[in-house]
Amino acid sequence: MALMDFLKNKLKKDEDFKAAEKEVKIQKIIEQRQKGSNERELERFVEEDRQRTIKEQLEQFRNKEKEKMRTNIFKGKNIFKGHKSILHQDDKMFDLKMQNQGNMFFK
Image 1 (cartoon, rainbow, N blue to C red):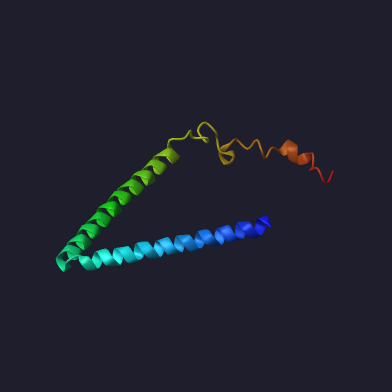
Image 2: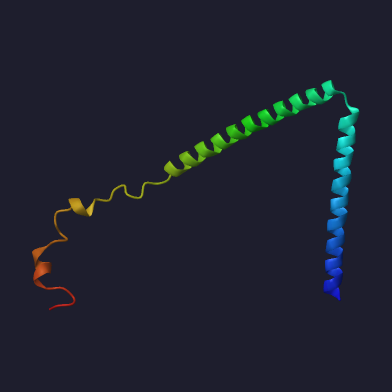
């Protein structure tokens, strides 16, 4: 029965949340209808300006983070410094003595 109680509580919470959400939506509509058209228009412009500044600040923050990531990648230690390429070595890999011994499969 604990599972049934849990499910009932969950459904009740969902219904309560939907009811509260609906109440808030109705309250916003009532507030908007009580305002004059000029006041609504002014609020719309203020909100657009606020959203624009938020977007600009977010872009600046993202650019800073990208720049930080770029600099962090190249600040690391160069793991290839001091190592010679095997292609430029003096043919120690291709020594004739090694070739005369054969390989590990055919002797």
